[in-house]
Length: 166
Image (tube, rainbow, N blue to C red; front, side, top):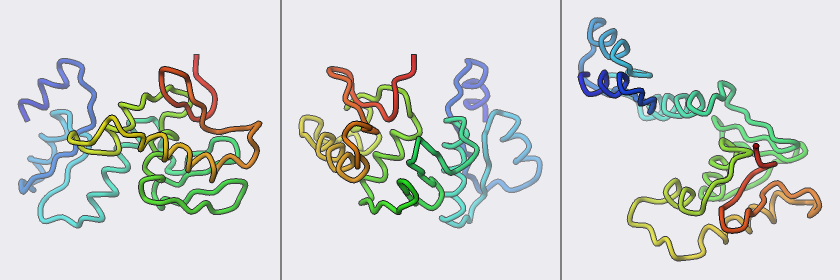
């Protein structure tokens, strides 16, 4: 709790979910008042933990609604349902993770290194073209009209979903 309180005093806003066996009301109050964003006690249900983590991510990206819409693309981050123009789009698990990451950062340039860090652990091979392959696959599934591409390559910088924010 002391470390968390110090992080908050320093202005660090990283989302924190406290996972502990301490389950008294006083413990919960101390955890949340120390700067915790959520608190869950052991034993816990994995589904509940996952739902709480997803909710924290939505709040971090200032998206309280689990459904994110960009033009005619709709991504439900809760059910992992992706639709384009009302039609379901079937994605592999990795394609979905990449799309969700881009959607939550829509309008921002996301570097290849950031994508690799998000999709893989620290031991991942960073010199391969796996990101380009997944981007290409997503484009084939999402860009029905080449004139209205959803995913843009910003040469030397990375990728952006939608337009680039100023």
